[in-house]
Image (cartoon, rainbow, N blue to C red; front, side, top):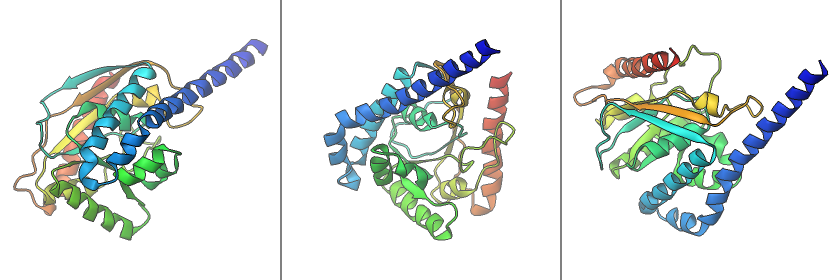
Amino acid sequence: MHYIKLMKIFTNIGRIVYRIWFYTLMTIPILVMFPFLLLSVAKESWYPYFFKMARIWSKIILIGMGFKLKIKTEAPIEKGKSYMFVANHTSMVDIMLMLTLTKNPFVFVGKKELAKIPLFGFFYKRTCILVDRSSTKSKTAVFERAQKRLQQGMSICIFPEGGVFDACDLLCDFKSGAFRLAIEHQIPILPMTFADNEIRLPYDFLAGGSPGKMRATIHKALPTKGLTLVDRNILKEQTRDVIYEELQRYRK
């Protein structure tokens, strides 16, 4: 019994150290690149430069955490084309993995709570489209800002589950915002499946995490040309089915 308790203590210490290392890896590159990052957010039109540095930052974190990427690509992402990137959402490293997987500059639509993270939050709130899901006014503002970015030739990334949940069977129900935007702007939906992020780094501080394989699938884009808002729920379920079926294959 004493041995078991001792092992639990060492396990928890290891989890805390691993999580502290994650936040250290998040912080150090930002500090090193701080003057350049600050300059890149001074103008909205300079966002592509910020995006390139954000990709470097994300790769440093994934490599530094000991994650070994295994990417399956069903179709290439076309350079310079605007997409609506969507994926399942189970971990904070979903952000880093998404940044790593595409060179096409995109803007995240994310929850405003992440803006409270020191240093990271400073740039997060200046470059991402923040949403307060309890506010109708905030949701309307999200559509306006996303439309502006799409008109600038950017892509948008939304995690359509609307948050990180533990009570769902592999994948929660999707919200409609991403699909409405994609149809209104006639840009394709590009689904991605992240298989191992929840295991590699769960949201819960003491839930564990470990180095290892990080598998992902970049699926074929789903066209929206000719679709209207009446079709958004069909498109939503079609996208969810693609990711859900891939998650099932990974679990098997």
